[in-house]
Each structure stands twice: as C-alpha cells, then as structure tokens.
Image 1 (cartoon, rainbow, N blue to C red):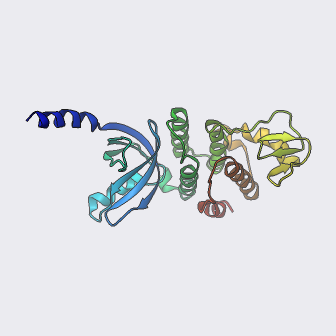
Image 2 (tube, helix red, strand yellow; image 1 turned 180 degrees about the vertical axis):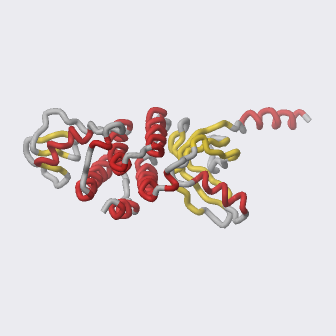
Image 3 (tube, one colour; image 1 turned 120 degrees about the vertical axis):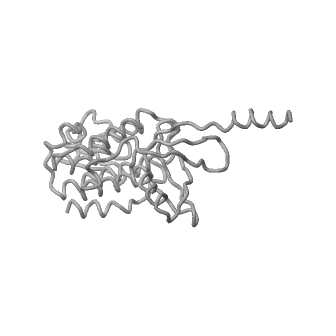
Length: 256
C-alpha cells in the first residue's frame, strides 16, 4: 500500500498539465491515426505535438485548430521525455473573422506559416517575439486597405528580423548593401549577395514602413516581388538550414 501512495502522489506531481498558448505552424501525417503538429508557443518556443487523426465528425472539426497560424490554447504535460506531448482541451483564444474569406489574406497566411516554420525551428521561449507575431496576425485579420493587406508580409518580415537578432544596420548609406554583413559598403563585396544603387538607398525608408503606414506605399507587382526576394535571401543567409519555400511562387502569382 505505501508503494501505491508513493506512486500516486509522486506520479501526479510529475504529470503536470498546464495551459499553453500557441500559434500553429504546420501539421504532418504521422500514421493512420495521428499527426505531428508544430506550434510556436509563448512559454516554450517551438514545440512539436502529436494529435489524433480520425474520420469522425468531431475529429475532423478539431483539425481546424491546427490550420496554419491558428491561435490556440491547450492543455499539455511538457516534460523532457522521448514521447511528444499530446494536447487536450484545445480551443481558439482568437478566431479569425476575415482571413478565411479573403483569398489574398489566406495566401499570405500560408506563406508566412511556411516561413515561420522554417525561421523559428530553433527558437526557444521568446515572449516578445510571440506577442509580435500574435499582434501582427490580429492586425492583419482586421486590415481593410488593399495596399495595407498587400504590404503586410513585407512589414512583418522586415520587423521580424529585430526579434531574431538579425536586423540590418542602415548607418552610413552607400552604393552597396551587403546582405551577408547586413551593412552598407563603399565597394561591391566579394560575393553576389548584395544590392546596389537606388535599391540599396531605398532600404532605410522601406524598413521604416509599419502597419499604420503600410497603405501609403504603392508598389507594383514587380517591385513587391523584388522586395520579397531580397528579404527571403537575407533570411536564408542568416538562418541555418533555411529551405526554399514552396509557397513563394504561389504568393508571387497572387500579386502578379
């Protein structure tokens, strides 16, 4: 009997469920009954979970919780063990009201979900970063100006670099901007990852764009595509193992 009491008290102590807020990034089928979902959480950073996958109505409806960039709250026992945590009592703490009904917004969400899944893979607990993503997505859901919507991902990616510690240095503007060092150079670097001329000189103004001023920047589709390409190259240089993004071409097609 003492052994039973010991197991009861000490076992329950070790098995502690806690409430966690997170932003769903991606889901991958694990087997016939389960899927692995990657979530960026406010308390643990990047976290992988295993959830049930079934064909009944209740299970199918629960899949909505793991759609890209859903903002959810769940219970889980997070311990440094081999098995992945299993979430329970999952619910939305913020539910999009406009994004699901806008093809443009949905495309941007899918692009950013893939981008964040790659960029945050090694990220530990970072509450300022979490709140930045959370606030940005809620602002985007409510945004109405077409130009603000079209420029949202540009603003988001530019200022995301601050929270990842790779924000460029725009002091002493010059003819060449080196994407590797993140600084201006008087002469072209000894590699091809740089921009020059008017594009280089425009960068400080571009990075001053924020959500409240995004609607004032009127870019052509080719200009917007070029900005995304430069930002994508910058992140691929500074983040290890950053892959080619499959959703990038779809994004370009939407804004063609």
